[in-house]
Length: 153
Image 1 (cartoon, rainbow, N blue to C red):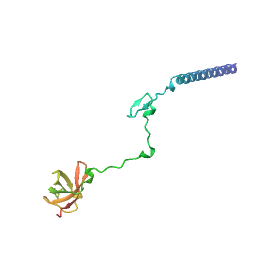
Image 2 (cartoon, rainbow, N blue to C red):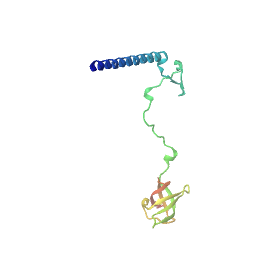
Image 3 (tube, rainbow, N blue to C red):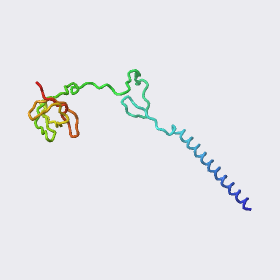
Image 4 (tube, rainbow, N blue to C red):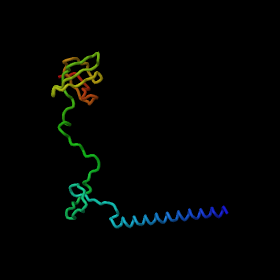
């Protein structure tokens, strides 16, 4: 008697599974039919000649022919500006230098800016009021004078 009861439960479970599958298939077909009616459910957008998104397609008369060979992939070449053309070697005067601490300041003769100078950036021994040539590099707190030489001129 227990055996017949068990098979009855199995049959009921299988019937429930089949019923769920059929319901799932019906829902799936209903969604497909619904999406076909409304343009696939995906909004479609066009880009006009000004780069704006629109929902209307562009006029074929307004289309512009683009030569594929003129399209440049990658980073465009940088054009030289006035800042790039200037000489990186600047001239200035040592306003302060402490040998025991190993740093000082140089005043640029062109723009009167004060730049920090560390002993590691020196090529020659310098003291206060010496005329020097130097280059600038970005440091932690601003621009630093590096490759500092005594001005021979």
